[in-house]
Length: 316
Image (cartoon, rainbow, N blue to C red; front, side):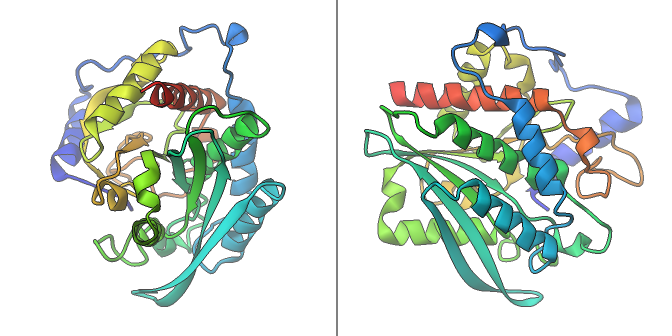
């Protein structure tokens, strides 16, 4: 599991025990923006259907039939694009495992690159409970697939847009610096060696953003100016109420890039579902992380905000 600092977990417990809500949280039910008249429109309904198809693969822990199914699904979606398969083998607590990152590139006129990333596999230690990760992996991978539909065939006057699907985000045994983030650690190191990192203007990681009750926290491990830009984009889209009312400290696939000086932001709603004694982290990493807990509306909100963020990045 991705890890956050203890003081945030304590806050979640206080909210559960005393019925408190963090100050300033406003949960709008619909966007203030008229989607029907938008010049830029992200199709959250179609993204939701892609998420359903990924979930239909079943659990996607590394080496499982579901994992192979998800890989084949990604390859099929990008069969007509320039999809790169970044295959590598790595030591894990369960032995040597082969993992696969996927990169899809949409070239722009400028030399820079904006990366949007997700992970697509599910948690290996939960392989026996039919954990399908509708929000944790499927929703964000689906958002990237729909992002490709928007980008495909368009003339990009700004930076190139690269979509990255990471494998091995989850721990194989227990989260640590060496047992987690396998795919992102591998790719960040590879791109550091070949000089690619110097071209990356912004790295935007999406994780757990399909939650019906969308509440994306401001991650303190992310680059402040990039989070400010995302916040500006959300405000311009009329969706500011879904972003950054609370703060968090998250260890996620953006860290290997942050550590190498790449401007990076983790767009994540870690507060997913009711916190109970049996499920202190809500639906996160439970068999309850299913399609009925996510929504096309949340995918639309985040997708629209990412499109506007890209636009703002190209104006800098």
